[in-house]
Length: 151
Image 1 (cartoon, one colour):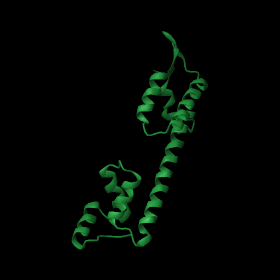
Image 2: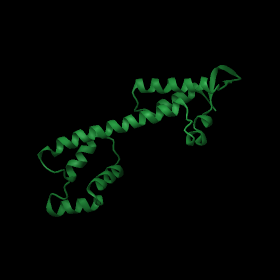
Image 3: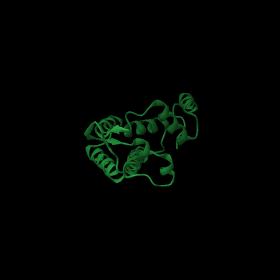
Image 4: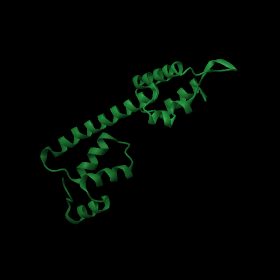
């Protein structure tokens, strides 16, 4: 168990990329869950509500579809974020291919435009999946003919 204020601080650090509105919604569902599940206050400090994160993250309850409002909100926000990512990527790729097929360089630039902090291993994986070849093979083909594979 953890005091609610401590958990809120940890969540703000963990979810640093969320907007203020998303964080407020998340914190509200956390408080809602505390009331719903009747979590107890610290016996030494009556102002500190103790959050039972083991109960909140109970895998058995989640398997049964009985997750609380906090996890429901985390999952919904994550899905919305992913859908926005794909929508942004689709827009950028559509613009990139308006003059012809998408090559590796354009794919890399599109991914970096949507996600400037993308990790190199993720970038390579996405490009490899998109072109159906290992990234290193794509780069070798590009070095040979100056263009490489297009889709």
